[in-house]
Every structure is written in structure tokens, then in C-alpha cells.
Image 1 (tube, one colour):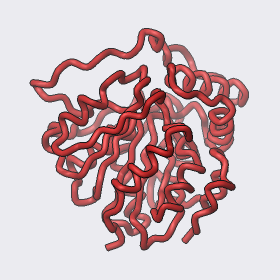
Image 2 (tube, helix red, strand yellow):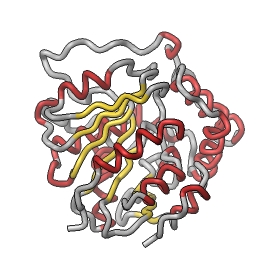
Image 3 (cartoon, rainbow, N blue to C red):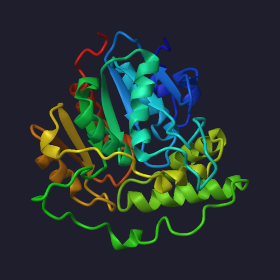
Length: 302
């Protein structure tokens, strides 16, 4: 067990404070960290597309662990120190990326966990809640949109025009560390929109993420992967307790949180004022942390 560090002593990029990096067994090993008492409710954090676990800031993880939670974060394939393919040649499907979360839980011997996803990670949480509700104690969906579209669903607002072409063009040279970091910071700034953007905080996390990566450009494989077998269902089929967290200034999915919460039976909506498409900044934690702790009270140790 890695005991929770004092959150006040942990910075956003202080990943070492969360304990050793562990790896799942078998093919395509996944790198993860777990902090907190295994007897406490387990929270599994699922990051966005092409994001390593570093983008779940260490100080946020420490704050959740200090609240009596076992917090687990992991590198998706092709990010961080998890199994990495050459750019442009993923050997997995999008379904594999989603179901990797269950492999992390299996490696820990956890049958059920509270899943917290951000952006594409929250779409994965929706898919897991649909097909594996026995493994999902609760779902928290942050900065995301509907993973399933029903025939009667209303149209959703388009992304802000300023984001047009954001991911067009080639990745920086994998050997140019400064360019890689600058590109990530620029993307995060654009996605934050009119929200609370802290460049020094973002740059610290980006620097660690690039340094830890086997190939910092391989995350583009997430866009190239074949979808795999589809997840069949609608939002109305989701039965796990669900919290939707959405920033009032999200330029990628403007207003989508309300539509998402309305489509899931019993879902609650928490709108974070002044937050864009981003991991919620510390300025919002006085609202976010109590909501996450309330959402994740169910015992997952049995």
C-alpha cells in the first residue's frame, strides 16, 4: 500500500509521490500507480485521448486519497510507459483501449471500482458502464459528450470555431523535447478556451509526460485505431449512479454535459464555472472534491 502523501506538499507533476509505477501482466503491459488504502473505495481514473496518467495531476490524486479513497491512474497504450506501437501502426482497437481499464482492475484484484473519466476517457466509462455494470460502482463523466446516440437525441452544439484544425498537421519531431512540450501546452491552452488556464502548471505536467513517454508522438495512434466490436446500447440503458461534470467554458463540447446528464437515468449534473475542456483546475476543487467524494462512497473492497 502507498500511503497518501500530504496534498499540500505535492505538486501537479510530482508523480513519484504517488508511489511506484506498476505494470499489468501479459501482452501489452499497462503502467499504473495506486495510492491509498486498498480497504478504501477504489477510484480508477481514465484519461483523455493520447493522454498519459500524468494528466491526472498528482496533487488532485493526493487530495482524493487524503479523503479516504484508493486512487488509481494509468497510462493508456501508446502513452507514458505502457505498451507502445510505432506511430501510424496501432495493433489494437478502440474497444481494446476501453477494456484496458478492466485489466488494470484485474491486476489489482479489484472487482468493482468507481470510474472517473475525462473527455474520451469518460466515453470509455460510458461504454464500460453499459457492458460491465457489475464492475462499475459509479460513473463520473467529466468534460465529455454522448458515447451513444439515440434516434431521438437532439443535435448538440458544435465545437468553437477557434478549435478548427487543432489536430491537423504533423506531430513534432519525437527527438525535439521542447517542441513536444510546447505543442502539448498550446493544445491545452486552446481547449481551455476562456477557462482558467495555468501555463506553469500545464507545462510542468507536460514536461513530466514527455519525459516518461516511450514515444511522445505515439498517442496519435488512438485516432488511427480501428473501432473494434461496437458497444450496443443507448444512454437510457446505463444503470450505474452517474455524475456528469462539465465546464461552463468548454469549447470542444459546449453545453454537452446537460444533454448527457438528461439522457442517463438518475444522473446528476455539476457545472464548474470558468472551467474549459480540461482537468478541473485547483480553483474549482472546493466544489469538485466534495462532489467526487460523495459520488464514490460505496465500498468496493469486497
